[in-house]
Amino acid sequence: MIAVLFGPPGSGKGTQAARVSARIGIPHIATGDILRDEVARGTALGLEAGPIMRRGMLVSDDLVVRVIEARLLQPDAARGALLDGFPRTVAQAEALDAMLARRGRGVDVLVALDVPDRVLKERVLKRAQLEGRPDDTPEALELRLATYRAETEPVLGHYGAPGTRVERIDGVGSIDAVTERITAALARGHEQAQAS
Ligand code: AMP
Image (cartoon, rainbow, N blue to C red):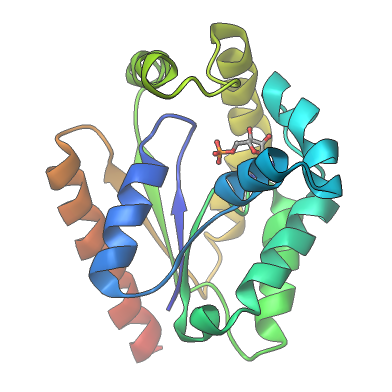
């Protein structure tokens, strides 16, 4: 199953994707984690992406599509993937669809977490104290939220067309409760994908 966990910064995608992927046995692929690792290792890609990430802006579609294409070719992704933080623009969604179509596949289900802005800001500022991510400052967060609304939300419309099941769920609640909702939404989407 190819699944996308979708939602704004601070919606809990990373935490939830790690839990859900362990449960359902498909790898969790987070472009943000891959890019942070490249930055930490000081690779050419990391040197290019790091300053853009610190400001809370999106790295280029081209760069991130190359990253995801390489990751999806690794053997563990043969049985599927739970994507987190990708696709973040309609152009990335189109590139993903094209690379999956070459293997006779497509995105089976997209689960979108709904979380109000007020809760997102509280969560991200708390994460800033715990993890010290350089893009969790109030300024970078405002930019990331604005970018999400302008560039990323339209991806939902892209997958609104027949072929992919879009499941919107409430992302507010205990971590366990949200994990249950996501797991149930993925199961519904998977069933639908098998049936079609
Ligand atoms: P995240 O951990 O998903 O919040 O990603 C952290 C940062 O990495 C983002 O603010 C972007 O700068 C960059 N990034 C991660 N995924 C993408 C993507 N799909 N497209 C563009 N930039 C990305």
